[in-house]
Image (cartoon, rainbow, N blue to C red; front, top):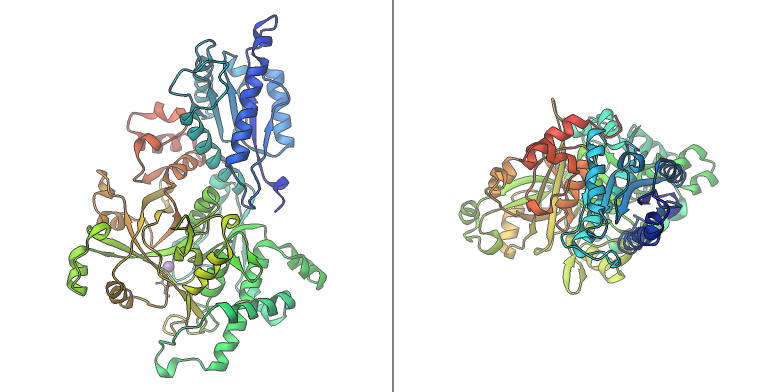
Length: 589
Ligand SMILES: C[C@H](O)[C@@H](O)[C@@H](O)C(=O)CO
Ligand SMILES: [Mn+2]
């Protein structure tokens, strides 16, 4: 996507409008605050295509309503999706405030006592709160001279947390979730709730029956040259594993070769359904060339498709990875089992980090005693309190093997930081086993890797709860390594042809994080979306922008950053989150 098409961050320099000395003395300082923040955002934040985030500054400082409305017009024209007001001085709250009900907004009032920047901040936040337009408050801890135009570390952190989360909100607006197929095995997340998408995320829902994938395979509605290139790459880099199906259930070599061709075609077609492909227009398929403008999709697969056709695991895994036959590229967000709520959870993580995502069943809690009982090994170190087995066939990115490195550490990274050796290492760590024919009667292949331990990760999940609406749950923690024989023993008890991640959440005093068992027990669904890094604070900030309450998290209290209005809903932060979200209702209602 061309970065000009992405939403921008709008910056509003707010000034005391009194001419005859006051305003004149502040013009340069105020405009410089805006320019410095714009430089910060463009240097620190990237769009999903890797380009620096674009900022738009109002044409003039805003001292009154006329300049405020001029700025609003400019922001609309420039596709501004996030709004930040900055000021070193007093100004007139309701005359200068940002009135747009859909723009995530914040105000930075400089803590410099020569002029009352903090007073403007408080006065205007009061206006925002009274008018039901919640805004984030940014105010530095230490007084700085007005002439000191640097951005202190604590202010920088808040500005970036706000901007990352606001940009994620803006990037979702107007884009689609594409459901390919419908409900998978009674998984309620694959029964799309269009009101959630429309009212909370500002997103559209697109639907195609799975037969559309089949039609395009049958009618060769995909790029034949790319198919050949993709098949060659797949044969060379995607090593097939042993067939663990019992004798009578194994597909012949010929059938497996046909399956490889089939799943490669599925991959091209699912991508084209999401993004479109101009090549299809050249081939005379003008309508198919458009695609469905989907930022995220879900493939039902089970059961009707997989009961007679090769499964979607190859397609989901490759599309979720940051590379394919065309080289290193941004990952696609594709949910297996068409679990749209886990697809959105993956999308939240992705838009906040620009890294590929692991889709997993939250499959098993292993207590230390149970591990000792089964393997003879008494868990120690990070595993001593037990751990959770995250595993699902299909949508786990191959980046999730943790074979990419940065300064010698296992990481997942934005595609523009990935190097060829990272790709090779991930492919080498992945084996593609013939699909379990008990589950996948139609055959296909499942990706298998074991995630490297020692990575900070965050698992999240959106759940829809009758009477509340959407709630978000978040568990920060780490991946862990188990001794080889312990890993094999536990993994072999499950589905050894699927990707495995051993996960330990950070434990806290909170009930749901009292121990590892409680995290599993309180998880609201069979699935979770796992991102590299501890990104819980950004998820919490973003959720508050969307008015989605967070029902469970283990993020340190000092990192929780929500609109100032939330404070008015009580002193218990987590309870006030629910009360505020209920009071404001969905962002796009
Ligand atoms: C193959 C199996 O049906 C799996 O798809 C099943 O265990 C799930 O992943 C359920 O979420
Ligand atoms: Mn699953």
